[in-house]
Image: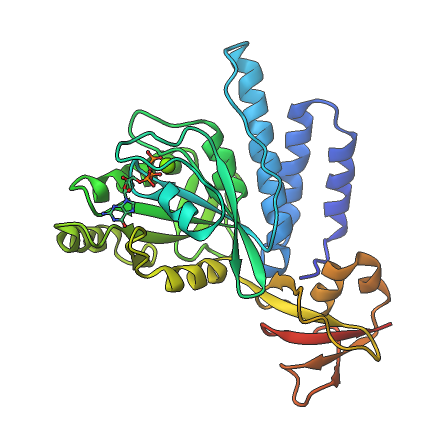
Length: 330
Ligand SMILES: Nc1nc2c(ncn2[C@@H]2O[C@H](COP(=O)(O)OP(=O)(O)OP(=O)(O)O)[C@@H](O)[C@H]2O)c(=O)[nH]1
Ligand SMILES: [Mg+2]
């Protein structure tokens, strides 16, 4: 959604661009954060600002702490309609799920701490592709520092619980605590805005895996009691493939995006490769995704789907729905 920043914001942005030290940059970024209107339309900018503030906080802390041994860091380029990270305690079935849903082949083993590095895979869902990232487990005394970055920058998370083990529900509580200690809150529905720019809310689906295991239903009851309405819980059995279709659909829904098909005047719509925009987005948001130049010169658009009748001419602020076809008029 298009954001109109107040003039003071641009002054703070200029200050940020001029700043040479991490400390000065941080001061300017915090000013930008305070001035930025906090609503749905500015969500993307909010996330970018928050990431930069956190990175600078980390950088300043690292400089203060002095030289220390290098920790592993990984960069996985974003791909597809969105990125979802797999988080959880050990042995819950994170890697088994990545194997089931994508062509990736992470190691799966009947003991904890099998996965040692992030492994991406692409999942096809209808006509879109989602990027899923398998990560090492989190426990009371094991935490790979790079997991923080993956959790902060993902569009959403899946929190996997091991229903095959009495410790499963408690292990996941530890995961939530350890992430919260790094100001990452996994929640079913993130708040629209937050006053604390260093706090990250990540939209999360809890997956209770191994419902086929003995004693799983009692553990599921305990889990439900513990989690309450913090986030939705989807029971599945990865190995037998139970609940996987529902899981795939829920993964797409977690991203909070809709699909829009572009159409050029006098031609058929391209129904093969949709663009995706945030749910609640309008014609202008779509134009921005197609090409920022298009958004500037945009006069109107024709819409098939959410308009009153097919091919109706609508204004730039017409709110689109999943699977609309849109022809931009310059
Ligand atoms: N009974 C049962 N076992 C499962 C299921 N899904 C996975 N497993 C088993 O659980 C064990 C752990 O699976 P992984 O996929 O390696 O678990 P992980 O969460 O990636 O484990 P780490 O990488 O150590 O954190 C393996 O022995 C799997 O075969 C399931 O649906 N039911
Ligand atoms: Mg694993």
